[in-house]
Length: 99
Image (cartoon, rainbow, N blue to C red; front, side, top):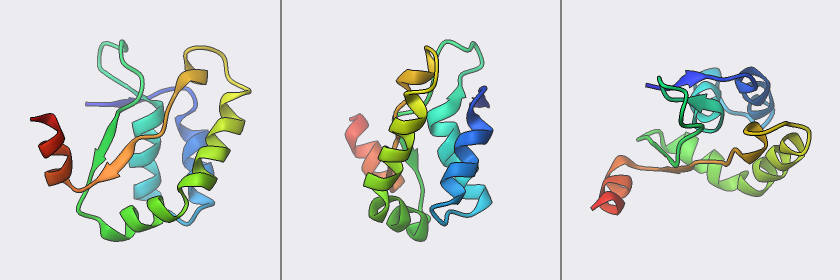
């Protein structure tokens, strides 16, 4: 289970600017600014979802989202300046890659 970190809310608000729903922004923000229970892992590699509108918006806005995160990262201290965007795919795709 992932828990929000310091910049989770800020990144959620910025994702909202791209047209994501409040629920989607929380999921996506956790994937970059979430941590494991032991607080030894920051972010996630993948978001697995069947939400096609979420995947479509994420794909179509990828460059803009990356640019927005880059601007934010330049202002952050470690380890937050190292966060990355997750890949967003259907669960079957992620499962296939894990094999």
